[in-house]
Structures are given as C-alpha cells and as structure tokens.
Length: 540
Image (cartoon, rainbow, N blue to C red):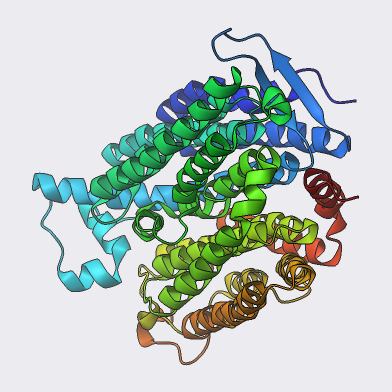
C-alpha cells in the first residue's frame, strides 16, 4: 500500500527542507549538509520507487485555483521510469558532490584571494599542472589543514549549493508528475532557476555569461511551450490533462500547438538547431550538475513530447512523426561528428548528449510501440551511462587537474575503478550487451524498421540505415575517448595520480551495476513502458 501523500512528499519535501540544508552547511560544514540532503532525497526516492512498484497508476489530486484547474501528481507507465531515474541520479550524485565541490570551493577561494591581491598569482605552469599548489598558496599556508577563512568560505558555499541542489531535483520530478499544463510549465521553469545559479556561481570559464545563456535559451523555449499550452487551454476551456485527453481540438489549433510544444521542448532536448547552449553549459557547469543536466534534465523534453504530443494530440503526431524521425537522425549524426572533434572531456560528453537526444527523437518519430518504448529505454540508459561518464570526468578534473584529453593517457593502471566504470558507461552509450544501452537501441531500431516495412516507406528505410551509421559514429568517439584517457603510455606528470575517493567512485559503481542488471533484465522498466505505449497508439 502506497503511503498517503507519497508523491506530494516526494516533490515538495526537497523544496521545504532546502533552507535546512543551507543552514546546516553554514553552521556545520559540507559533511552534515551532504548527509542531510542525501537522506531527504533517499526518502523521496523510496517513496517514488514504492509507488511505482504498486504496478498501477498512482494519482493524487489537490484543490488549486479555478483559473487553472486541479493540481495533481500522476505516476503511470510513462512517468515512473523518468521519475525513478531522476531521483536515483539526484540521490547518488549528492555523495559525489561533496569532494568535488569542496575542491571547486577551494579553487574559487584561491581565485578570489588572488583577485583581491592577498596572494601573488601563480605562474601559468603551476596553474595548469598543480591546482593543489594554487589552493595552498592562496589559503596562506603550505600544510594540509585549511585556514579558518577557507573553512568559513567552504561552509557558506556548501550550504547554498545543497539548498539549490534540492530545489533543482524537485523541479525535475514535479515536471514529470504534473497533471495540468500550467502546473507542468511552473515546474519546468522552477527547474531552470537553481540550474542557472549552480552554473553561474560555480561553473568554469565565463560562468556568469554561460549561466545567462542557459537561462535565456531555456526560458525562450519555455515561453514558446507556454504559447502552445495557452492555445490548447483557451480552446477547450481547461488546462487539466484529463480534459485534454478527451477533447477534440480543431486541426489548425492542434497542429500549431503541437509545433509550439515540440519547438519549446526541442530547446530543452538540445536537438539540432536548438542545441547551441548545451556544449557551453555542460562544459562549464560543476561536474555533479553536468551529470544531472545531461542525463536527467534535458531528457525531460522527450517526456513532454511523449505526454503532450504523442498521447494528447495523436492525430497531429501521426502527421509530424516522420519530421521528428528525420530531425532525430540529423541530431544523432551532428552530435556524434562534433563529439569526435573535441579535446575537452566535458564538451565531448556534451555533444554526445546532443547525439543521444537525437536517438530519443528518432525513436519517438518511428510512431511504433517498440520505437516509442525503445526511446524511453534510451532515456534510462543515457541517464545511467552518461551519469557514469560525467562522474569519470569529474574524478579526472579533481585528481589530475585537466580536462584536456590530449594531456591524459595510461590512467587505467592509476585509477582502475574509474577506468572499469567508465568502460561500462561507454558500452552503455554505445549500446553493447550486456548493458541496458543494448536493450534500448535494439528495441528502438526494431520499432523504426517495423514502421518502415509496414508503411513501405523508402524515406524511413533510408533513415533506418543512416541511424545504424550514427551508432558506428557513437562507438568511434567513445572508444577514441577511452583509448586516449585510460590506455597507452602514461605521461610523466601523471605517474603519481591516485584513484578518486569512495564518495566519488562508489556512486559510479552503483550506476555501473544498475546498467548491467537492466541490460540482463530489462523488464524492470519494459513491463510498464510497453503496455503504456501500446495503449497510447491504440495497439493491443
């Protein structure tokens, strides 16, 4: 029996308790703030998983305003895989955040001290090769203990970080569980605000500019999305999903709103044309946030297309499906080709994410039960695989001090756990058995081919063939990245590199185990996904 108000608690407890995380960080430091944040998200994750395991749709409805309709939360065959992956990743990455963000806070403390002229700026060689030396020099001493000024700085920043982190996680879950167009939009926007601050405050490079770029692009997409919502809501006189499901919209309104919704969500998905913001933001964001932005947040755009276009506007969807299919293919190839050209690990993974979102759109455009089910499985596997790879990038940034792939090599012997997990993560993204990526790709391509054969469509046959070429591109950049980072001769300056702390490696190991279990037994998610997709498309 699901606990009463389970979904309401799962969504709003992180928001309501975020001030506690802030105060804990300021008063007691990053350790207690981290464990408190972890406990809150773990409890919320257990609530979501327990509700999903009930096997049936879980709905909660609460009175709201007459103007917008009813406030509700819905966990069904479509929402539960998204909700579970979002909160599992959010919970695991809390542990990973502590060592990474302490490292980041120390660097920023050092930079601020230099800017104030308290200490002399180190040479370029020191800046490139020994970040620890910068931190020690800036803190005004050369022993391992942190100065009182640095400790106070870290405490203040960690409190704010974990508070924003909780609000960010809550925004993502609320979007996926919403049962009302205006409610969906509100959560969609709530998600952007902490995301902006996390990038603008603790990103790399020109972080404030990049934070603003993130805010402007995603907010512009959200405004277009809202226009689509208003067209629907004002036409049928309700914003509730339940009313929308039964409504018959005029063809022109349905098409215009479907296009607006697809463009608005396409910005979030960062598909080709609307992808410009993503390499900058993922490259700049603190790595734990990159590991949430890329695997969890951008894929919510696919959830929106599933729910709002495929389910609620089926006639319009059948008309535009082929365009989504081709758009997805172009995105797959473009993202993969750009990833091959990158030297910065995080930018390579960012372009890889663009390519992977193309796979999702490609699967949605197949307009078949298995194609749609495969696309949702691809979201799950991308969440697991890319989560692992971004964590790998963070460990290298902390332990080695560089993001440049050309300056790395032979790290497998120095960082065996990171290397093994990174290989499993890469195999997941490539779609190689026994990882979950294989199951997602296999089902998605099967569905795409099925539609091509049924419709006897030459265009769909060609897109199917080119889609397989895109998978070869995915393998190319992943294997090339692994070879240059972990294998070959170890450069002299990397001979003393050590493995990441357990806070960083244990979360990677959990995700690596999860992707293999899911690859062997995909019915964990497919049992709920396939019947749902069959119901949406009217196929038994």
